[in-house]
Each structure stands twice: as structure tokens, then as C-alpha cells.
Amino acid sequence: MYEDLLQLDTIRINFSAGGMHIINIVLAFVMFGVALGIQPSMFKEVFKKPKSVVVGLVSQLVLLPALTFLLIVVFNQYITPMVAMGMILVAACPGGNISNFMSQLSKANTELSVTLTAITTSLSTVLTPANFALWGGLYVNFVNPEAGSALRELHIDIYQMFETVFLLLGVPLLIGILVSHYLPKVAQKLKKPMQYFSILFFIMMVVLAFGNNVDLFLKYIGFIFILVLIHNGLALSTGFGMATLFKLPFADRRTLTIETGIQNSGLGLVLLFNPKIFPPDLAIGGMLFITAWWGIWHIISGLSVSLVFSRWYKN
Image (cartoon, rainbow, N blue to C red; front, side, top):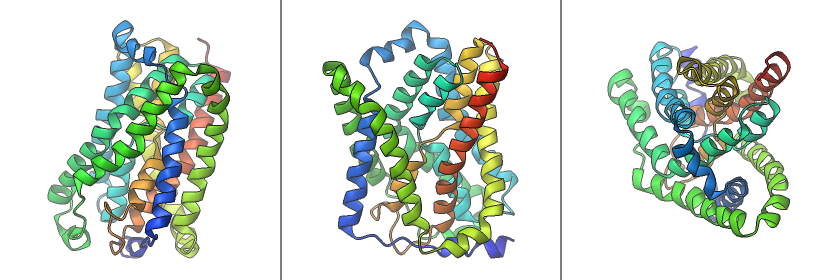
């Protein structure tokens, strides 16, 4: 199976500079849409109700990447280096904006959900590149030293990654927050259409990634499905487990479950598409496969968990 999966890593991405600029601009609009639901006052929650917020941040930004690394160690002999790096990249991304909708559907603490999304997205300018570099470096240097030949070209320009994440997330977020604060009626009208737009954008990126590799997608979807199922289940369990351990209100437990289990895979794909970070001649099919399928699956799992929470649990 391992040798067969190496075929995934042969997938390469070839985008023109113009095409990449369009994708970056569209993602900036998506992040602007996320920020329309963020009020500066939400950040005060860290000081007003610090326990739930701090536990949520630790769960998503610290524990999820660390447990992902341990999961990779367990599955090391069954997964390729690029699949492992894809799992690390997903875990390093901030929470997805659809988590707010799912928290509302779950009858969870929606205000806490929005606060966590706002903070993790803002911190991702620094923490996404940092977490990817930290855990990716540990994997390359200690877990799979024999993968050196497959990873010899994977020298990520960490400063370029910081710059990309800042421009794609930081600037649009700042503009969106300002619009939300000073033009609340405009922000309210734009918020829902932008959510639908972000889903369509993600679907477009998945099609671009695998449009010429449908056969490989169908061949390995079974194995990747199981791997992502386990990884996403670990993420959801981490959020619920941490919230339970610290005896948070049940509404907050629902929120942390969803926030930790829903990752911004769209950002992961955009980073993979960026030739300045991942050179076009570098075969990163395993990373693409994991990131793209994660983005599809976490919507299904998140909605399923939300339905269970809303029907079987009381506040």
C-alpha cells in the first residue's frame, strides 16, 4: 500500500502567475467575508470569560497539532511523507468560518464560537507557519529520516509563508472588522452571501487540484477517507475532551468540539497552490489529497455532530 500511495505524491500543480493572483484575490474576499461577523468587542471575551476561550485556543492551536503528530507516528509505516505533511498543514490552519453556523445549529455558545474563530484566524498569521514549521521539521528530522529523498526539495520559505498568510488573512480581516464596526448594516447584508461564496470557492479549488487526476482520486479515496475520518474524529474528540476535562458548560463543550474539528482547509489549499511556498516542480499530491478531502469531510462530520447535539442534548 505504501508503495502504491507514492503515486499520489507525483501530482504536481502548474498555475500561471495570473491564475495564482486570481485565487489569492478571491481568498482575500473570502476572509473579508469571515471578518464581517467579527466585532472588536468580541476580543474582550478573553478577559470577561477567559476559561472557555483559553481552553478552546489551547485545544485548537496546541493540542490538535501535537496529537496530529502522534497520529502520524502511529501510522508512519502506512502513509507517505507528503500525506503526513498534509495532515500537519491541516492541523496548523485556523478554524473554518462555517464553524459559527454549525455552532448555531448545535444550540452551542455561538458567541464563543465567533470569538474563537476571530482569535485563531488573527493568530494564524503567525501560528500557521510556525506550527507547520515546528511539527513538519520534527517529522522530517526524527520520525521518517528515510524520507529524505522524497522531502529533499521541501524547504519551505517560512518568511514567504508568513507574508502570504498576513496578506491573505491579516489585511482582509482588518478591513472586514472595520466594515463590521463602522458599517454594521452593510456587513449584515454581505455576511451570508459571502459564506455561500466561500463554499463555492473551496469547491473550485478542489476541482482545480484534482481535475486532471480523477483516476488517482478514485483509486485512493478509500484509504484517504479512513485516514481523514480518524484525524477529524481525533480533532472533534480533542475539543470535547478538553472542554469536559475543564468542566465547561455543555454549550461551551459543543462549541469547542466544533471549533477544534473544523479547520480552514481552503487556506491550506491556497498555500499549496502558491509557487513561492511550494515550487511547481515539487510533487505534493499527498498534501493536496489530504487537505482537499479534509475540507469536504469536515463539513459532513460537522453537520452530523451538530445534528446530534441539537436533537439529543439539552443546554
